[in-house]
Length: 386
Image 1 (tube, rainbow, N blue to C red):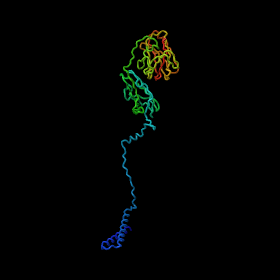
Image 2 (image 1 turned 90 degrees about the vertical axis):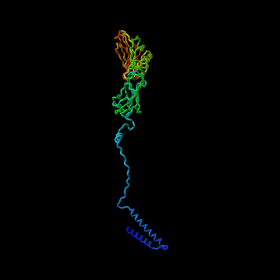
Image 3 (image 1 turned 30 degrees about the vertical axis):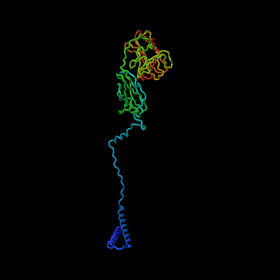
């Protein structure tokens, strides 16, 4: 039907054009305007029909669906496995606590402690496990810098597990160098995987720092001196500890050990006495000791040694052994010993020396720490040879 309409419209246009082309010019006819409008209407109708036919989509062809094309995303190759492994590696608790971390609690041998050259000493550190992982026997304290002072390159922390929240005391033995100066050995902790750690600051260390005064002190032979008494003449004895000879009188608190007299000593029961007493303090190391060797004396036929023994009343941790003996021909002989603890009671002792009658010997007094030396300050009051 549409094709027929188009054909009729074309024929009408051709007829109109033919009439106009063969007609001579004449004066304007009122019907010309009507004819022109009719032709324009036909042309417009034809154009509209053709445009509609061209624009109308086929009923059998579906409208195309818009497609959004995204650029390709590069897939990481080199570190994809590492990222997966890192995501499954747990080094912290949910609250952010790291696996390995220590906290300083206490130490012995304060910085600047003076020792003679070539002298052995022990330093301890008490650390607390504030991480989330237990410290096992695979953990160690390792030397990281400074002067090792003959200390170990690595030392196992403990034979038993140290759980988070527990404390551990590390003990390391050193020997001071032969040259005077200040020496420092620094340490860190190492876990089972060989990773070093210490405190909140990852660069922090713990250390032993001492001053070496000079040549090592050696025990020089002491010529026998006239014997006076064990108390008043106590500085005529040769006093020593594991660090060598000690000054007499000494100073309370000296880490090398000390001895001094007290004219009004207080016993551990709280009673103050008016008899002269000697305060003996051991060297501040595990199983430390102090020993006094008196000048030579000839023992009488009915001689006896007597004294009153007591811990320092203020030292509740006192736990030591007091010994009495003699030195003869270079051989030490111990006649008796007594275990002293701070139990609120003193100990009166007597030793029969009749077996030594007529012999010239050097009497000895000694105090030994039974393990931890802290609190081992012993009073030997009125030591007499009768």
